[in-house]
Structures are given as structure tokens and as C-alpha cells.
Length: 192
Image 1: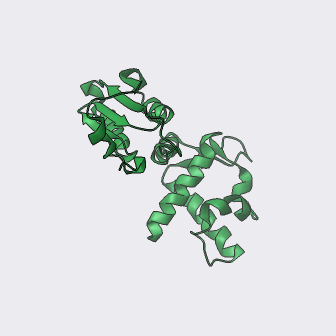
Image 2: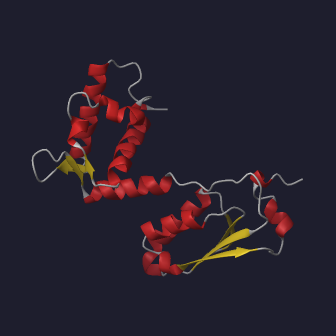
């Protein structure tokens, strides 16, 4: 994995850690804070001693400030605060990290996602369909996607983040036409 890919992953991890509160605690940017960031960057700073790690984390945080992802808190000691740009990137990282869990045993139910997203929301619609594809869903028709495992929560999170949840319908069905062919689209079903 290239250094820039590793850097991006660490930045996304820092932003995800901060998204709940909107801030990165002052303790993370003070000496001794490498412990707080270690889980995010163990591979990134592999081979660095404690001082080099601290310097690298400081460099990363300064880079994030220059990129407009973070800014200094309004009061002294508030640490760093996510900007609108930082929050947007954290939300994208959150969506990109979602997966549909595969249960040990399939319940023989199909999950169907239908949507009718208006043309003025084309960017969100395109991103939503790309996300469904990356989640492993199968496109049955232009705006109908199917999956054998529970995925309502994951689909809902993506739709809410994109502000298109009012245009999405989620259905669970026991039976569907061409089921045998559909099962072959999902290798995790282990069809014989």
C-alpha cells in the first residue's frame, strides 16, 4: 500500500473518531498523545520511535488544518474542530466503511431496494447506486436492487447521509421470480 493511501486512511480514521463530538481533544495534539492515535496509525508509523511518531502525527494534523478539514477550537484548550469540509469527508469515509454482514445461515428472504430519486439529485442518485454496487447488491432493474442478507440499516444510513431517504423503499420478500438464477449472483449463499 502506497504512503498516500496510508495517509488518507489515517486521516479518515482521525476524522471518523472526531465525527461524534466534532472535535479532536487537545490531548491528541500534545506530547504523549501517540497512544491515543496509535490504533489508527500502527501500520502508518511502523518502525518509527516515539518521538518520530509524535512528529508524524503533528505533521498529519497540520496537513489536515491546511486542507481545511480541521480548525483550532474557538476557545484555548478546545483542541481541533472539524470544519464543514472535514465533516463531509468523515461522512463519506463512514459510508465507504459500511458492509452488509453475512449471517451463518440464510433466512431465505430477499431484500429489495427500490428508489425514484429526482433528476435534480442526480449526483446523490449516482453515488447511491455506486454504493449499492460496492455493498454487493445486484441490480435487478434500473432502480431496483436486491440482496439476500439483511441490509436495511446500511441502506438507510447511506440514504440519510445523502439526504435521499424519502425516495427509497425497502422490501423483504419470501419469494421472487428467477430465484435460482439470482442465487448465483451471490457466492456467499454457496448454491450447489
